[in-house]
Length: 329
Image (cartoon, rainbow, N blue to C red):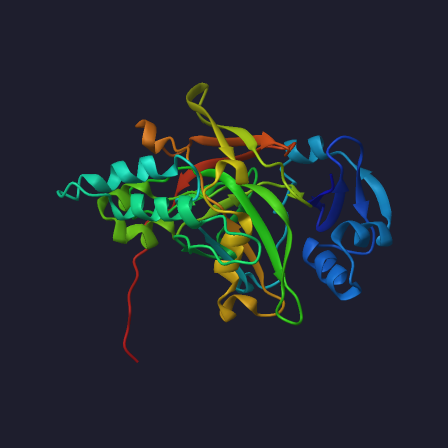
């Protein structure tokens, strides 16, 4: 299955095509996945057809590139403000449990929390027939392309944050074509990274808790994923492994179909602006926070899953406090 990567080569960047088994090779004639995808849409080709049409150049040692920290984001926009970063939560079977525990303490009445009700709506109506519209999911905004980090880069938590916790999941990347049609380019591993302590304080602070950086794995997996994706989430603190737990994703483990989540994102005209990129995080049911882990600066998050061959690895750091003043003109 085709994988597209962006690899730094000195002061320049190359686009690399790889089947996950054999040699990885430079794609001729393009210097970014964005350029490759735009060309495919304009030519009426799939990404695989576009790669074949452009042809292949030199081999690339991806393991060496990984060790040297030269694996970039799988795609980027020339203007990060035109790269929307958003996602949906409570989409995975089992994902409601942790959220429900957060919110039950604040709700005295013995009735389902809003989180559990939202999850149940997804179970009952999140996978509609092909010609029908399903229930809309929870949705959140994380920022623009300036918030995204590649494997090997630090995930920086704001000084005011109460927590910086991992969220191992799948994400999909989209490019809006000239006529406003969104095209799914492929899938990647992701660490959605959120402030779970802030969210636990009041579920109406969810929007605040999500305005954080996020990391994307280096591989853009082109085509359909397996129905079930199984991986492992780890946190290392120096030589100590402080957290390790399997996680599952893919539609077999979700209460919503990808198509339903995509529909409810792109039904808004704002998100169908030609030339814009989007990355959409599909949610998770596995969090170290739910297991009582308190992350610390210097912790290293490691996320791996088949069919992705390269892990997503990022270190947690905390930004220096920056005073913010608003002045009248």
